[in-house]
Image (cartoon, rainbow, N blue to C red; front, side, top):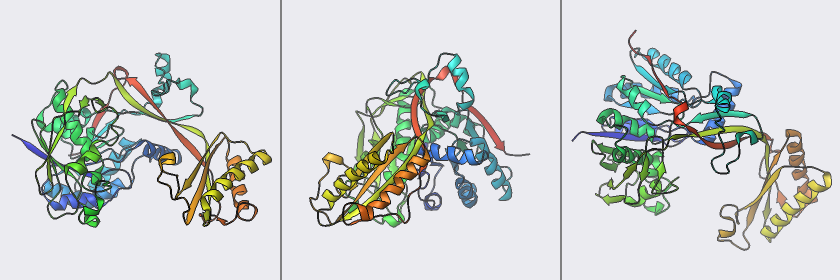
Length: 454
């Protein structure tokens, strides 16, 4: 039975940049995937594209490719990444230039795009497609600020098409994370759209690989003390068979831990209904999933079932939602929690006295209940806490007035208060998230090949 090996080298934009080379040097692989995108990442990329229309993609992906090209070519490993973000065509062109400068002018860069819905929003409205918030049901007309970005989550078949057309590297815009891994399986094994069990097994392989080191011992809450050599954490590898069988592992000699307990933490990450994990290509059921520890950092995964996909793509939209300012003070022992609570109350009373209006606010007392709220295991009288208040305002001037008021509480407020930041925090525009759905019938992914033989 044909088997391929896929490594997961990145879990988010900002993850370890040496994992790609570690995977390439550690042993044989057929594919490596790098998952850059989250909803907040798209917001960051949108801000960058507003300043420079030529950007909008993960710019540091390009030098990583430049560094790894010799080993990618030597080891015949194909690289797949959603680093294209809001500008996959621009990212692809940058990679073509890198390949040419590195003496690899024949390298083919596959690009998957068409997920950007911004040019089509008005035509969708004319077709009666409202792009309602899929949790609240609110109409798109209720979005309180200018829409900044709107992207559909494509699936794995466009990635497979790029590989079918000979791409050495595939860069995409917004696809569901697991599609980066499912795409090579469809290409290698010829899986068809109606083979739901196979697509579900490939999807859950992708789900286990998409967060990089979290599936090989990083961020492990079930015994982190026993994870060997985290400084040299080996990133996860999926050994996948043509029948969808899967063994998860790590390169020999690298740090980390591959056990059922580690994998189950990643498996349940971002899972809503375990009987219906929905992506563009299939609906996966993991309620019968089993894991078998084979020893030596090898775990067999089986029991995933699939069902027909939905008729819609998920859509991630962002809009300008006002201005945010986060300000705070540190209070020290004794009675620091009582001081922090009184300090927050005093801040709000002062803003009311000064006539400063804001849309919303959130008080957190870090070191006491800032993470788990009322569920916190609270120390009744800790040495110090950080009282942080975040405000949402209509304009930057109001946010700046709030920031200025907080500083006065060092001498005019509750005792033992001091700022944590150096200087006053500055307000910034809020980019808010609006999730929606769109019929697949009105959106089509595009696949192109850049570079290659002249």
